[in-house]
Image (cartoon, rainbow, N blue to C red; front, side, top):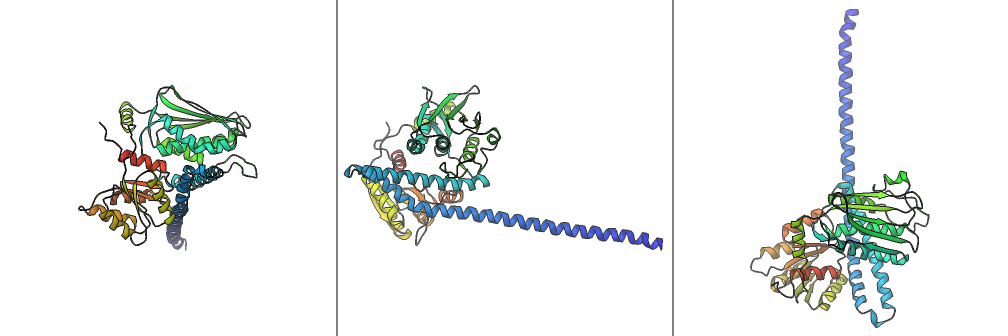
Length: 412
């Protein structure tokens, strides 16, 4: 009997090992299935946010354009300027919330990309102040700006750097009392980095919060009325964008009720980048252009047409893909502004077929769409779009693009 038991023991061990291995395989397969479901869920969430932003940006675009038109005719009625300012502020606020939602998804997936060019610090700061000024004005807060006399050039993404500093200014305004002073100053640090400081007289940050304040969805304690607003995304976006520019951001606060200071450190442009900036800065007004707008949203189409026509351009409109393509092939247009989601034929097909027809005029093609996704941008470049713009686009931005592409006078 002992001999038989000695023979049975290895068999038992083998069986136990076999069962353990089988359980391990099953557990591994379950873990993989869970991971696949999680990734699919994230992908669906990203797609949903992208579609949501597209659907909400479509009505925002004509509202923003209409607001700019109201600003020009505001003197015709004493109440119009006030109404226009309210619309403009609320459109800007909605756009920021939409951008924050999408940026939260991009941070999680690591899909943020930059379009770098040499930039003058003063222009970036000016843009950031324009975005944040309505909030500061509504709270009667005083903004003091101290910049060096010499021009400082940085190599970066103008929109994203403006977002960095406007987020910090808006954050300072939200967490500071009415009438408080907010200071923005810049200097060249000991390590030859550009340092931009934004300090406030607000609620301050507890020491234990300072280590997590840049984490996604992290927020300092707030009152029940949520008067400060926000989604807890702004500071996470600041850190991500600054690091993508090769810099870093620091926070300093002596505690609750003692205010806060955020310091952004960015590398300064080298000499070749400064030279490139000087060439880009030479810009004239635009000459009169023939422009075709292909946009199925009637309000968006008509308001954009009106804005561009007011600037002296000859503007035509199409409301579906096939009609737009036919007009673009025969109209000798300088510029085609085309939506992506169109009935009958999408914007990709319109521009792809237009560019493929070598006998047809080859206009400058701008995509103007609610879809803000790297894949959409990549496909737009592939089919021949020269520029990709996300709604809502200000008329000032369009003027800048058109004047740069078609200046009123040729450079000497």
